[in-house]
Image (cartoon, rainbow, N blue to C red):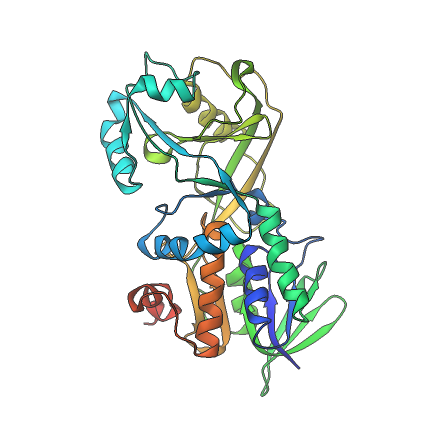
Length: 357
């Protein structure tokens, strides 16, 4: 009998495996060939402490020391650029992300392709970092394995049965018995809940697309900050000598292996091009991922209202990588009864109990 059976090998599941492996036996089931195949492997991978709802910001702050100790952060910086016709959106974003305003000349000194005929305001701070997502995932996986945990890939769940002792979970090749089930299935969390006879949350997977283009104008982009458009209707970020650009769309879709919508991608690239002097002439590659949100766009962490042996680790949205150390620690604290470093209000806002009718 396994103490904790985790369904889902994205950052939510693998971080939970690491934390819970210190409390009992852990097995993680991932349906794909490798960990972090879906949203976690397609992340923009930025740590920005003030990004997200208040409870997400609290998780981010509580995760920073772990990220530093694990040596998964490298300097990036964050810049917001704006135009006269988007002044209100610019100011809202600048205030929310606590970005000091800088001159357009200062902004162009960092990103020379910004078009001074269009961009008339900018804000910037250096306190944003790239996350080495593969290293972070493998750090958690190594911890889980070192504590005796088992990670099984190519193990798509086909059935879940509640038993007197806990759960029977079947895959194509095996059946697993567990006392506690942790649902970290990303876009598929409601599917897993229905299989288990637990009330779904009503989560929504939202598609987000990415394009990778050659460095604009042949510039060395390695030192450029991440760039956001006002209202976050596009963003761009250096990536291994190239630039990745996203239209930052949030189109509701069914859970699936996501792919880009060419028209949406083209519209996003046009919004980026409207702020710069260098046109996009070709793509190196493109892809899409699913950012899955609960109805209130806040993470869901803790036991289900209708079954305390069913643990939600869901609704990470676009915040899973940066919040994972504190989110997984909260799950372990809730299960073990250990006091959390997070405030009572934060824990309450993350609890599935908020959906209780």
